[in-house]
Length: 608
DNA sequence: AAAAAAG
Image (tube, rainbow, N blue to C red):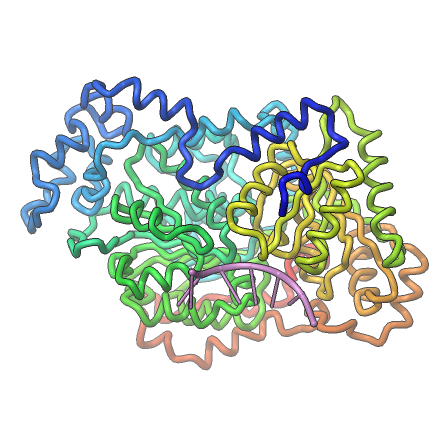
């Protein structure tokens, strides 16, 4: 891919300049912005106490390098050290002392301020205030299970600790989202959780807050000191590299100045840097399954100290064939069994396979189902247009052109264009660029660096058009996507729902346009049904196609009633008896009989 | 059939 091929000719010179500078910027997770590099270099003689304050660890503790000095970095401290948490007064308020001393020993590197990057975002809170928080109140939520802790209405009601509360403020979170209102108290109560919710609903914070808070407040046994092996306390698994990066970025914000160390590991990037990060100590490890298995086999990571396990986008991971690797990680390595760890399982859909995973990985769990923020029902306007294959490109450019005319205050709304194949993505991107539309693309054949660069360039608005395969369909939270174009419709209505879910996020309106032609016949009925349910105008021609298409329309999971059939699977399994580490709960897996029929059409349509 | 992910 030559650079010129990806250079837009249409954007004005200022845009081009911005584009060039942005794309030249390295975007690896460990990237330290220049101003921070300068700062740490400019302050070599910074007094230890100031460093300690910076880490939020209280006045008496001294710098981490002092810590090393006083207690010997490589020495086994032994049982007597157990008092360390209290003895260092102020260190996380009586907490995790010895467990995190590896982290403290991390060499006194100054923690980069993860919020500094927010300034780089051209779209600031000014626009974020446009979030329609009232929309949250309409989101349907269901919980089930034994002794479900009541939801909270404000962050203040939850005791997350000062440091975390401050980071919540820095994140400008005003009010917990529905999934946070329910999931945080459940997790803080130590319960396992099976949650049906999508990214964009505030899911990441929902599982990060309790994990960070737990790491800060609980005592942990001394972590073993095997050379070059990292012992994280929490593991967060996600299906794609970009999603792992995104979770890592957020988790770093949430754990800023808490001393809790977050590390990300994923494929496609050089492993050496990740190994170095791991050696510096890790409390929370965010990873894609493949790279983690690699690290486990190299014995560079051990899971024996895991207290928290979170699986994000579990259905997606199964779709991608990760089940063997996930089972290996969770069941066949040295991870503590259910009940000895706290497990949080998140999935946008809830098919049988996920239920089975839940019964295998969770102990006495609480089930939580949350409707989408800005579900297709209300916040996404859906259009379908009949476009011949040969007309798609010019039709897309017409749309993009019209969109440009409509732009208010000079800012180009972001447009995400989904295509079926990687080759198709490259070709369309090239076509758009040649015709003066600033586009980039993301798919699995691009290098990880190119992928991250494309995403960044898109997010910042430098390249307001992103052509993508399904790598970007789920989970990625890209604010300000104004328009999702299904240039090629997927063959599965679920994929369609996920794709259009990239817009209309956080209570803002979104537009989704689909190009339909005779190669999409199998989608006619599911699409028409979905749009109908979402109170969208269904074109008469689509209704006619839908009527003509044989029932079922391909593998249409939405018509299947097997969503909750998994309950039986759970009953059949006898894991329950043997693994009930909670003792008192008598094996209640707690999905109520009433659950199956409990949802309105509009709600299920957002999940299935 | 295509996409994603370990190298």
